[in-house]
Length: 97
Image (tube, rainbow, N blue to C red):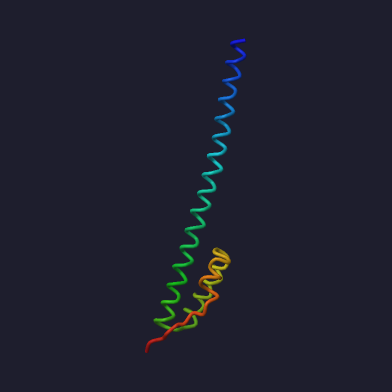
């Protein structure tokens, strides 16, 4: 009887360790995905702001295309959040001569 209790406890600890390891792995992957998503969004926001600054300094087809690229990429990365707050509002670009 003592050996049955010992084997039951031993098996319980083994299964608990496996379940804990699986849960830790899932949480780690989720955290890595969130970090990657944050870095992508950060890169897009910086790219948009730099493109707007470049357009203000020198209006050219190339700078305009770069802004279009970053806005298109922002639609993929940030989705509705960015569209509602930033892109759907008119952007006024002042060119100083």
